[in-house]
Every structure is written in C-alpha cells, then in structure tokens.
Length: 123
Image (cartoon, rainbow, N blue to C red; front, side):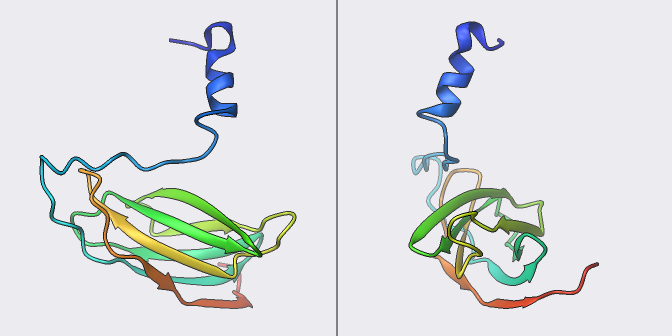
C-alpha cells in the first residue's frame, strides 16, 4: 500500500501514536485467559519484566508507572521477557502491571509484577 501522500506518517503521529488492544469479540467466546505470572528486575536501560501466560494467552498488556506518568505496551506472548525502557523525564518504572489477552481480545485480571530495582547481572 505504501505511504501515499504521507498518510502512514500522519496516522502514526496522531490516532495511532500509542499501542492499543484489539477490541474483544464476546460473540465468539467470553472465557478469559488465566492471570499471568510477572516479575521484574532492574536491567541496563530499564526494567526487565519476565512474563508467563497460559495456553490461551496470545498477548500481554503491560502498564508501567514512571513517576506520575503511565506507559502501555502490547507484548506478544511468545516473548518471555520485555524491557520497559526508562523514561527520559521520569526515570525507571516504579510499578508494572500485566494482564493476559487471548486471540479474541478477552483480558484476564491484572497482576502487579514484583520489582527488584537493584541492577541485575548481565547475561
């Protein structure tokens, strides 16, 4: 399709500047996925979050709090680890919450990831 007359750039800068979840499709199924397991530790440049979901988990929704600001990310379930980058203005994430999302957009309950903010050893 291409970036005809800059439409792709305009959408990325405006309406689609932030990640978003696909709306749920309850007419196809309403069973919510199991609550994920999540934990985090300080790493180079951010907080490394470790995520484990059940067999129906397709994505993780990840909220991180940096000072008074919240950040959101959609993480593929195939990723066992995700780096929440430090915010240039507000520093590292002080709280991280995760939920599991299935292919139909159904969302599990939120879980708070315990954070160890001491710098983890390099792997």
